[in-house]
Length: 342
Image 1 (tube, rainbow, N blue to C red):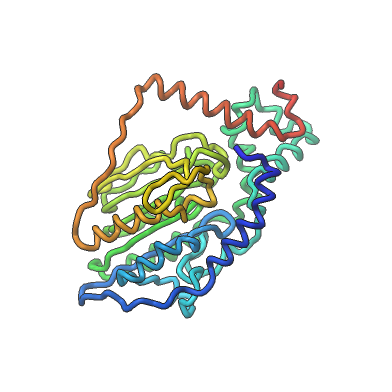
Image 2 (cartoon, one colour):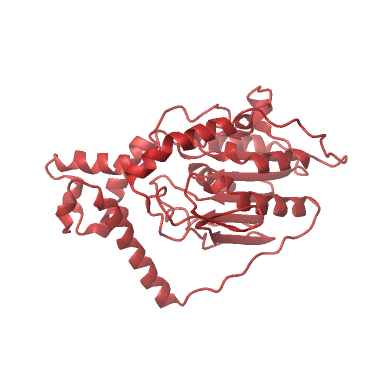
């Protein structure tokens, strides 16, 4: 896992690329409308207003397929920027999440733990060993109060109100990253009509963890469900825990897999690790979604890759090892790491 120091060195570059990619769109293609009811897509940003706007290939492809982006008209934007086609995780009508954050998650972990050191009866007194760091809700709540201010209540109300007023014949695509993935998974239970395609990209829940999301049911009102996650670095804080949604009832398929290596459009391994920030605009992930959505809009049922499930005992051992590994990595740069030994 890259160190916090190396992450910070890369951060200005990542932010610059993100803003550049939110620049002007390519010339708009002619809408592919064939007289049938239009399809609408809602793309949702996550932590730090990142990074759905960088799914340039996907946004261009959807526009070429005649898909409409309601976030453009609802917010009275001209639609000439990629950022116009995405919405923040906490508001369907807002231009951004409404507050600034440091995009290095370790900053908040270290601050919360360091602050606790000076307080009698601190959070750290309740931790019996290193692995408790990633499962202690009090500590995670303290950390997340700095990262995720407010809630997604406004988003849930606005999006459900908008979608429930649509003609049932209109097909809907929901794609979210990070907190945005958590928001779209939460809104599903409020919707009255079927949803053609739902994609949850490296989902992060309210406590900064994915374990709180994987217990969520993917309802049968979803046509095709697509989920990808990485196990290379934070975000989420429990990034080594598998991101599969255990109860997926999507009618046309549940396509869920980890992807740890950055891959080219054709699937070729690019020789570098995929991070939380980079996952949504990975060329291969974008191409997969484009292919699946294109098939769905033609009335075809996309194939779902199969993967052999590990034996239960082996899976339990693997998860336990991951828990300890995550905690150990968090402690390496923490001033009070001696509390739990070397």
